[in-house]
Length: 532
Image (cartoon, rainbow, N blue to C red):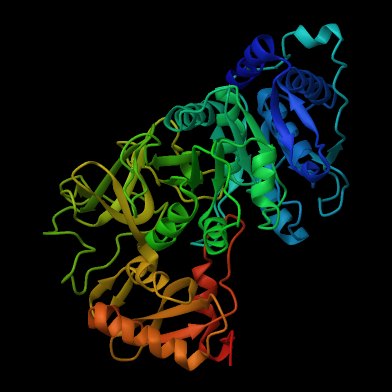
């Protein structure tokens, strides 16, 4: 039996009637569907038998594309526990995007409410009916062709580079799920809330699998809505919230008139940087701690996290949690290649680039505490290589994977991210990190959100440009002048944006990350101003 199958069987024996998943859709009507742990075992048995009958062997890929969050989550966990590789698809993705993923993943079958958007010839499976609760199959062992053959196949979002296929095996997923549950102190008494997309690794591992590992309950919501959010959290007795900075920003800007539920232990922030000013506004308004974290698909989600019960450092993504982390610079260079005064230095590569040793046999050396360099990771949850079509040699001989991020570790081992290596702005040889400017601008009056990207400069090569979403009805010239004056008073000349572009919204990916390449590609002629 698979590890995840064993978790399901143990939880069903121990707390079969306890809820594992709940659907938030009908919460306002006092209802909502629930999947118990016993029901999950029955669903897993039904899925294993369905896959066997369809001739889908252990380790084969099964695409899942369902609009219903509870049905999607049940199928994902059950198929994974049945020893197959789940290929989660965005239910709203256009056919071309679906085809792009399936061309790399190569599934044997698909689970969908219809064949719409799926390539012809792909075997289409219908949701099997689980045995009734009184059936003797409720206590039977989950039939699996081969243990540890399952996994999840994902493609990177493409917001920071060329999309790559990533196969996460069950041992990697279970390792990280246990690390998440332990680091966040999850117990069977916890009830989480997750409205993040189930076709991304965060909701899959931090939401579904960590909850399963802890024997807890997760409330699934198909979409975040500020209207009725806090009443739903109160009604469903939520103890922790899985969120992204975009959600936290909306909540911080619009605190409810009534007191929020006191049972919430923390709000987890992931997927994108959270400005310190937003963190302070949220915690001041609600009295709920925010736990900043850092993860990536290649690491089966979480890499670092601030402690729930220990010191939390604003602006830091926390301490390593089940994964080794180091910050390095190119071997043979004095000082960080990303530090000040490194005119003319070049990035040795992007995330997933091949390992290229120097003459001494080592490409990188660790940076001292506080020095900015490349963030690298290794551990049981980290991939050993990309799937077919991905770059070869991405993991060095010692097992280190370059994340493509830059940052530093402080004296206590907390990781602070400065941005992506390919987002660093080279202004006349001086390296500028967009997050430094973004955090400053996000704290200014009237700013809802901000992103800083590089614009071409004929003399200096590049210069920073700030795209700002106002929080209210500011006039364009007044806002630009206020931000320019604030930057002149507080930022070094090189870090002052050359332009402030007021826009109605920032382009975001499904998990809330800013799609910076779309901003860089727009050009000044395509700017849309939010206010006259």
